[in-house]
Image 1 (cartoon, rainbow, N blue to C red):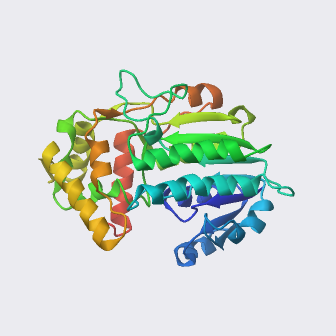
Image 2 (cartoon, helix red, strand yellow):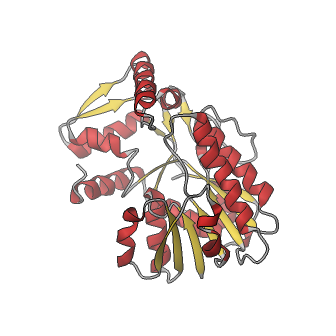
Length: 326
């Protein structure tokens, strides 16, 4: 099958397109920086396409010849709300318009959204698809706008939305910050160890995405995806501490986290670049939980996560070491 993937050179995208190549598909990957896609030369059937999500003319020809689209590209860090909304929201709408244009061969779009659209939830009442979305950050707002514009502009093209929990694994650079800290001898502890989290290894997310792509049951459906468990920040830190051997746990008070967020805002204003920790990220970390139910995707698509947190963290820690990241 001819498949078009946006964000194929990113963390999730790299894992997804490698899997699609193994399955024998022909995959065109939209990338902003061709240099980031040199590794694709080693994988049969992968072809980078230089372009920009906000410039449909840069990918219209290739997209129109594809039967299936995985839309992963987007910003996870941005300096302003407007930047998030433009790329993650308007960019998704433009992609859907091209996919639905006359003459296009696209039959389905699978959009990778986020648990962030739901807003905070604890394990006692996890986020579910039938509930109204209540994002509390610019990122969450932008992913929700992307979902809305996808539905509005898809026309006769089928779609499915996948909302992953916190994703970790090979090539990740966000959760990676905690692995790197542990390797350097300390592990930051957020929420006093009681912050509740849904987590997901990238291999399980790739499985969920392929299930959603190749099943008609998913047409017009939204799915949260996680490993099915609720983890605490204390549990996460304990695993990282044990993996690193000598790492010291460093509790981060709420006031210190808020201050660090403000410093991040200032740094972003000076450098005019998005940063990993700002006041928006601090606000997320100060909630009581980010937990979702994966019941719908289990029941409708047969999703069954295979990677538990401890083995997933162990494998990821090993990957970072083997590849010189820590």
